[in-house]
Image (cartoon, rainbow, N blue to C red; front, side):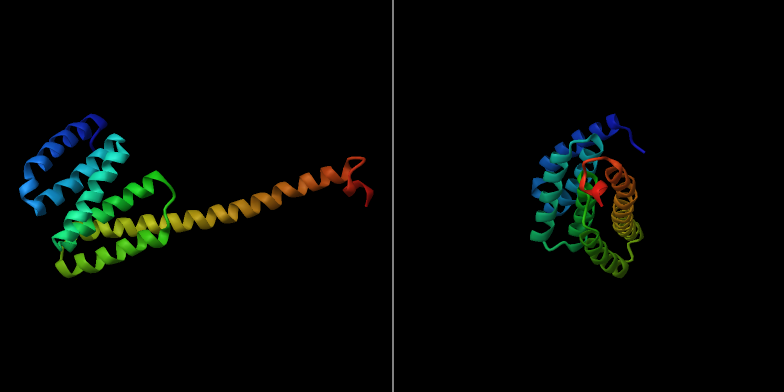
Length: 160
């Protein structure tokens, strides 16, 4: 695992490489994904977002579906870090990637796609737990509050 300083060094080198490879769009899009990953590792989330959006756009423009999916998976991880993500949107990216990378026989990319599917399932399970926990917590906490309100003189509950 890289530490923050190593991510920062990598990001600097990748930014320079991306500028130099403006003439090689396919290679540039792949480097933009690595740049987005490195920037995410440094905490520069807005810059990571911009690099990944550019990678997705470049890959689409050049009809490079594998690179587009790699960029979308990294973008989905970034979105997951920033805020609660919709499990269905994470699943959609993962399913597309799994189908493409299975056909290609790209084990490393397939592993990344399955990891993203795992994040989607964790998010869905956490939402379910959170929802159940909120409901249970509301009921559990309302019982003592209701009892306390009923026992206070001058409240409607006490008059019953």
